[in-house]
Figure: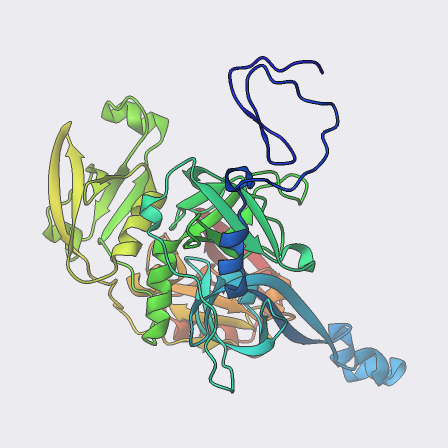
Length: 472
């Protein structure tokens, strides 16, 4: 190995510093530091401060199911007996992490960890366990807020919020959670980017990307800075193998704070509604607009009754900034608006015909133009098991639906139901059944009740239109 001759110090295992020209032995003995300046730097003080506030979240859901729908028929049960057709139960479990953000027992985790749970338990780092109440689930942000209570009235450890807008690429971060259910672990890394999740939807898709190892089970855990403040809630990884590949994503703390505050006040997070249809800027669109590179968000259509129209937005406008902060894409615009909340105004930087102007837009919630009239379809039709609501801008905003906010949308599909077997999914818009246009949940319920042997239907799923046929 010989002599190091580089003009930079090298840190030895013993915490000593080797300067230029000094010989390094092949196998240096470990020594206790002789002076304070030889103490090796460590993340331990930060970890000790924040780890008690990072928890494990155990979610479970009990499902009743039959072995086969044929055994509901008395004819089959006469020959095969009840044992084959007796309802059975199975328990689905999900494991994730969470962060205590309020000493009274308020815990933030991911929506997808508790989305369909009927029982949730939270385990603290000191091994205490508490049943948890879900007080808010927000699918659009993939955040949920839980409540735990200590009967003794003791206060829980917490992590304070940092301003995630001040985080920069290159900042050191720690990710804390419970990967693979092996117990609480800490990984270190840096902020590597601010980005979309590849292939993900555009709604609120603005994340802190980090190379700190995030594995299954870390979902809902804390991403903290070197001051021990929360800069994000770990959400997911992009991986070809199922393990961490150094590409992890966290929901910025400024959005987490908005959702948590809504939960504290007993409501749901309200996002500003511009009253415009927005479109990503593709390379072809950028070329047509005379842009060197794709950036900004294109205004495709304007609702004449919305706040965007009142502020003077027009079709063909390009939104490039929110309150002076550049906007690169639709996810970033949605994120900026979501963290503003409703009330007051926001100043948009807008380009039209190559000229830049500003528009002050009122931050108003999306209107509920029609009653939701939520219904669960029963009976024996292929639609049995669907929970549906009437679409409106408010409903579309809540569930992150980006299409035409009119018609009837599937909110939930009961597991094991005819609708589940038929392949319907949450977010499907039921447009037509046996020649009848479906414009309300009442119409859908009436159409499903009509006796027939064949069901022809049309469903809008994202940007696809599906025409199908099912037999009763």
